[in-house]
Image (cartoon, rainbow, N blue to C red; front, side, top):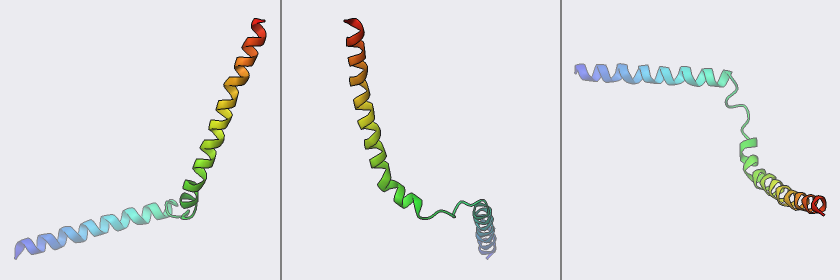
Length: 71
């Protein structure tokens, strides 16, 4: 019977700890922005593609500049 009291005490203590952590993180604004992470996953691929296109075009311009300087 004593172990039952110990288990109840441990579970209530753990629940209170989780509640305190939740309240602290909610006050700091952890849960304020629910929509942008879902939308960000859709926009990341477009940003990466734009960067890849820009990076691919830049070496060609550099190569042309090097060729022009060597002539």
